[in-house]
Length: 243
Image (cartoon, rainbow, N blue to C red; front, side, top):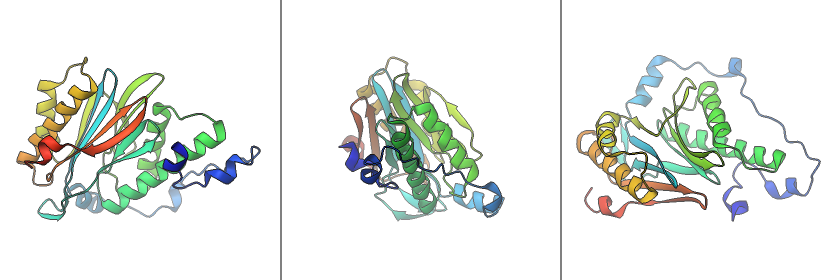
């Protein structure tokens, strides 16, 4: 199954047939990147969204709203999936400009594939967060504050990645224009003994609270459930029926 899911960015079949193959390491050259002005970043920050990551005793939950908007004032799409699988046991949210976020996700997937081909093992979530921070700092992706969540041999992990490449791990995190409202819900409802099912309810409640007050967020909830078995992404029907 994994061979089918992770073929984006790297053709794995031919590489596996050549055990002596040494893939190149792709690192951005900072001097060759175009200048990004503060005004450009401010425009992207105004697009709005709400994304939540929560650790649980048996996995990780990531929740996002489903609205794409222009400046938080015009709804350009009502059914956007803002969380994507990037690793056999990890997912990341799409925050910022649509094209920039999609490019960011593609690059991270390619790095995961290269790592697994070279080392014949899965990348740890800590290493994955480091790569995400490096790309956020080194490339003009406009992927503002994505949330990364995953599970590995060391346990469950949730990280927020800032535009300057900072990587911060926490039990739960919220990013996007609705974060102040969503944080209030998580502060009240989160506990360190939540199961994945309980964490899904808490995360969806946080998105629902943000939707009530943030014009850049809305139109439903997407939930990613991450466990040892893999990543499952689906809409949260309880709230999508009323949002």
